Image (cartoon, rainbow, N blue to C red):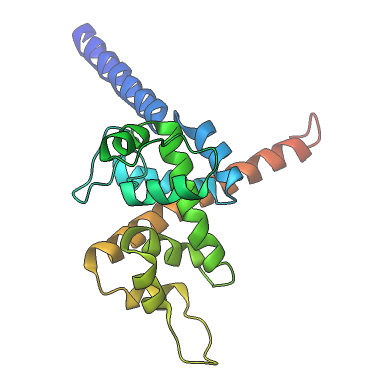
Length: 207
């Protein structure tokens, strides 16, 4: 019996250790995400959800199409950012310098947020604009614009209608997966804020 208890306690400790290690892993860039998202006026929860999907917070990851780092930013986007940013540290127009830059979590998230802001502005007045932003981020702005196109005078597409227009299966799965996680994060935070609000407003000593 004692041996069984020891085994159970050991398993519980291991499970707790894995859980807390995972929580540290997926939230260790939260303050960086928050600061860069604020700088570029994008939702930090959306940025967090993108990184979760793209690399699971692994800054060394490289994609099949030369995407690099946490937000899987391409060298082309990094050079575009450098050209438009006077303080950009990219001194030479080389792949090596770009790859080194994009492996830095701080710079990768900064450039990723800068790029995401472009789509945030473009689709600002659209319902469910996050879907359009994600589609553009993954497949390019020209494809997202094509999927978003409606006849003159017609109402904008709803989020489900837009997603149904995406004819690249991998992009549709990408958008759907990130949106699902993003909405769950938002819902979880909303519930936590509601509980905190109720706790503060509850009279001291009340049952």
